[in-house]
Image 1 (tube, rainbow, N blue to C red):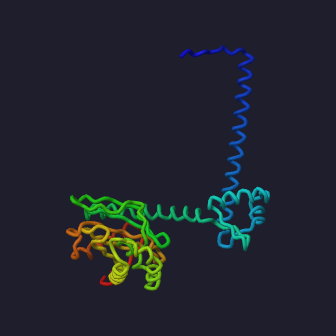
Image 2: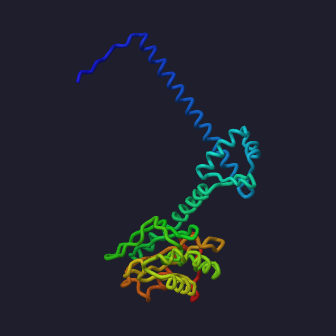
Image 3: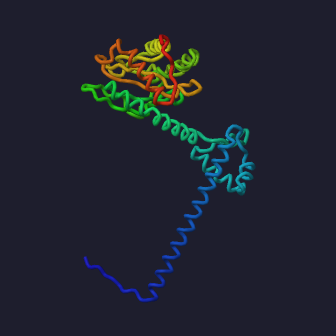
Amino acid sequence: MRIVTREMNGEDRASARKVSSSKTGRNSDRSGEGSKSLRRALLLLRTVAAHDDTGMRLTDLASSTEMHTTTTHRLLSALQDEGMISFDPNTKLYKLGIEMLLFAESTHRLKVKDQLHPVLMTLAEECGEDVHSVVPTGDDHVLIDKVEGTEVGRITSPAVGCRRPIGVGAGSIALLTAVSEAEARSLYERNLPHLANIRWTTPDRIWRDIVAARRRGFSVVKGQLVKDATAISVAALNDAGEPVASVTVFGPNSRLTPSRYEWIADRIRQEIIAKGKFHTVLCPSS
């Protein structure tokens, strides 16, 4: 292929510089406008968040942010389309949307994950089995962190990000040891349509496991998700006594025998208190 080149004269070069300068100017203008709109949108989000309990009207938002009402409405509409802002047509009030609440929830999960990770590390090394943590999210639970054990022939626990209804698995049952019986029953009944679809257990068996866990202060689930595996879990509570997570040791039945249930639960409890900056449900026998 033959490449043809042409030497530019002075006039051509000046013209090229002019065109290039014009394009750069237009790009700069667009970038500036985009940054300005972003800053205004963030200002609106912060203002709505500061008044989320009561909500704010369009005119109040425009006045508080010193923006024209038309501009305020346009930005609010865009934020509403993305789920960042919600609008009640009856009260005419703007509040934070579901996406912003999910962001806040994600931040909370990351904090809990970081605080409990040293607990998982210590227990995985000490027990030799997989150790994981879950957090409640609505009527479900999500596995947020896992440390693999070192024992030969260990059983692999569920993956990080796994989400199931509360009541399925030792980790989520442990969360129900720290709430009232009425609340535990209510959540169980709300989840019944989902629990009925779990192939490796039954709703009746789940309720029996919940009752047993509440009686002893920790949960034990044996031979469900994996036939030859046992999971032992303890809830981590915040200062208000609310369950914010649970820590679970997961391994083969041959090593996690009934004679070790109490000892493993005590070790989980001790590590949560010592390193996780949380409280736990006390075992009735302690």
